Length: 354
View 1 (cartoon, one colour):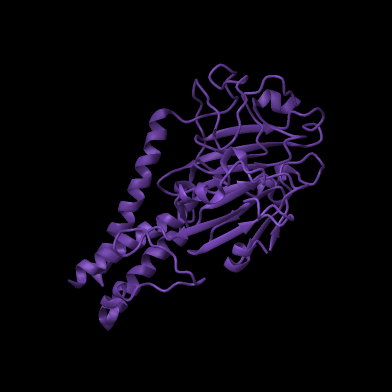
View 2: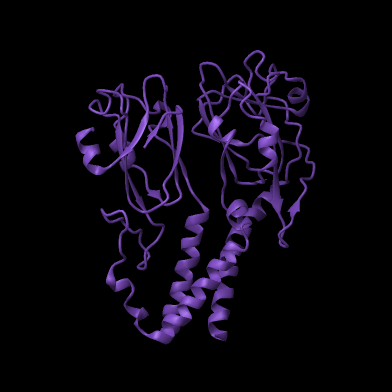
């Protein structure tokens, strides 16, 4: 009996850690963004989503007319920490209710508010856990009764620590097999005002397959174009591979290689609004593989972004980057499964030894 409980806990810990590594990105209001024009019923929008810890919300709006305020339940109900960038990224870092509204007079009353219900990835009975109204909820007593035995408790603590340390000592598990969400330019966003040296910014990051880039900008003045290496070097926006214009574009790096982005507005690339991203693949020993050339390239995928139909990726020029073969792409999915099996087997063996 104790062995079964031990194995169950190890499995749940492994699955929970996967919930930490993986996070979804949601653009609030989808293509309509964050607005008071009654285009979206935000609570109806939220009711169609399952939000979990480590997910990310993106609020996209015109910062001249709107903002984002995180408030208490009481203030949310009465429309009574402010985000004002115009493209705010908020990480849901705990299981709870998160309340957001626009603080501009009258906007909350017109429906510009949303209640986000965040749950943990999994509970002890295998279902999704609902948060308690309090900021810090307690687990039901039935889930912890089996910990009353002191020897069992010590063993399970050791096994839990082993699994956690395995993931902590291998941070690439969350950055390669999971996803990193990188806002290009950090708080300065995607700008031509010389606030960010984007290539210096990338030098502080390690981008891997599966990571997501977030380009946040005012789409009245900027856009995002993926281009070839040659067009990147010459700041030529006339033959882009793909064009993104939403003002809050999320682009997933699905293959290893070099990806080149610039702003197509006249003079902006020359002013430094361009960035080169290098995505790498892991190897079993923890090092990274240099991308190998392939005859056909493809651009990274975009999520919740507007891609100009006049620049179809299939008909446009292939990016001057080195991509992985389809067989390598397939192996990535098996690697995710293999990692979970490895963690579970290792923790089980340690449990038998100790």
